[in-house]
Image 1 (cartoon, rainbow, N blue to C red):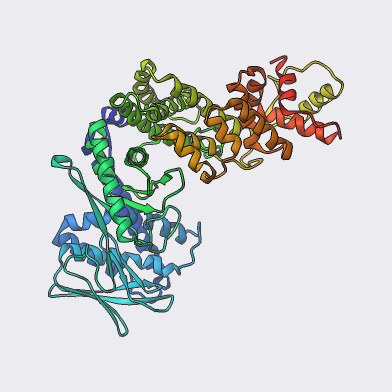
Image 2: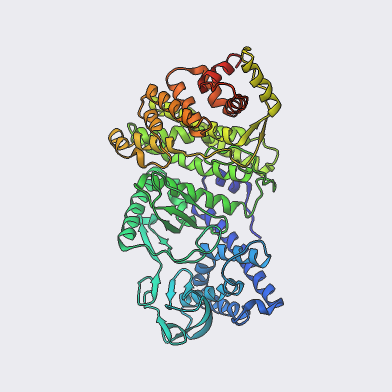
Length: 594
């Protein structure tokens, strides 16, 4: 039984508590994994055919026990490995027929043999022999690396034999011998590479795992080996990112190594740094290769928060099981359930803290000031939205109250005016785009408004026009303006934005003019886009932003605060075969009683 005192709970809510609390979360997760592992074995024992060509998984359990007797720390290394958790979750869902997978079920069940073999190798168990599953010629030894047996049937078994310090994997006439140092590559063997970070007491190793099949979020992934030059880039960027975290956020730097020890390196994503983690894979994050160490540092603290909270949720309920996608989250383009919003608050709290510290150290860094202003506003705004949500438990309310208490210190920080300006605009951009695509105004109300326009009546009050939330987006959305702005506010931003804006996914000439400070040009460019496609979401919201920048507050307010009403009215007018009005004319008309 794993329990935490309220004092320890409060420390975690405040993103405090150091590495010991994180290790205890990991220990609790280890217990959960053992229960799942044992449950998988028991289910297979009741239906032996599930093992396929492999022996009963009880034999793998016996090897795990032997590894524990020989070197308990070696077994722990395998059991607490992030992808032991994701394997246990995925295989459990397969057994319960909650998901599907192209690999035969016995291959997933048989992964327990791979776990046992890896633990025995790590524990230096003298002589042992075990079967392991092979998928498309690959045998995984979690935490160690990948055996590649070459051309093979889609799935088969192999024998792993350890004798006198020699470890070989054999099937038929194909044999691979592990090198003395498993981290090194050898013929038929790809070891798990690491990045050595930090100095002194904060020195630790981070795995760069590009081979484990269970390193993905939603199911197995094929190996995707980093090229040597990419590996060197990752190591350099991680070293610089860690130096920033160590210097700027020493409290996070103390705790993070206990909770984030494995990174799945993903290819670069233009002008963004996508990252993700899973509650089942405690200790791991998927991160796209960044352009610079600053954004990587922010991603590391962000994913560490997700991991820390995911561990806490294994021992305490912060909200009920309401999974309705009903809430606005400023870091997502779709409606989110309460649990996802709570996770986002906690993760972006850390991002705001990072940029707050960076801005304090570099007060003339406009991009850092923007990132702090933006995430400070979004976290506080979202806290205010959900703090009284009925789906929160008492611990959940207590948790968010502590986050809000920490965030209260932000209110008195002075931020560069230009950063505040762009933060407000980008926040309005995203929220308006979300409303436009996910809120449907009441048809009867829109019909009355359209009739009033056609009869030349004064604009109606629209405050009370009801809406219905839907998860099906009405139109596409690109966060191109936010991506462009980050380029524009960065080093040598004016020149670089001019050079690369066409490469930003979804960006238009109107978007570039807006972030380049050419408000009138952007108004005209968005008008041109809307004449071509009057229904286009990003152009409709872009026009609202451009009108705000150029001082047309009345039309901008309606376009940004009730865009779903404006678009529905425009559609209604077009549906009556009436002359096509200018978007801002309808917005100004609607603003008369706003």
